[in-house]
Length: 108
Image 1 (cartoon, helix red, strand yellow):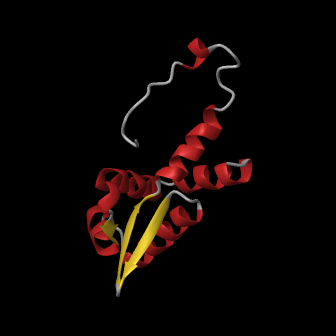
Image 2 (cartoon, rainbow, N blue to C red; image 1 turned 90 degrees about the horizontal axis):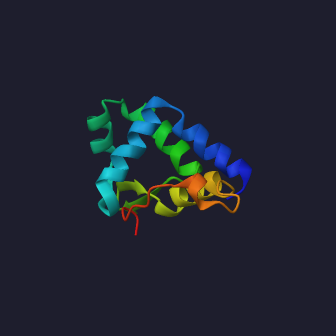
């Protein structure tokens, strides 16, 4: 990930509603959620939700799948992995103890 992409991803997540949407989609996993369900759970008007989904999609953090008239949104694991890798790329400077980052199996 390049710096401009990282800035776009961080900017997308730096909004209360978008961060909430992203976290909701993380919990939903590969199944994802339809726009109506996201709007209902987040208590966001559909027009506003559309804007937020567009920003998260543009930042590469979520993706959408169309099935007829229905669109399902889900987290894009590669997007968040790339962002985390970018943020921590130089943290250790040859000294792994400086970056004792927890490892998880959540995205394996």
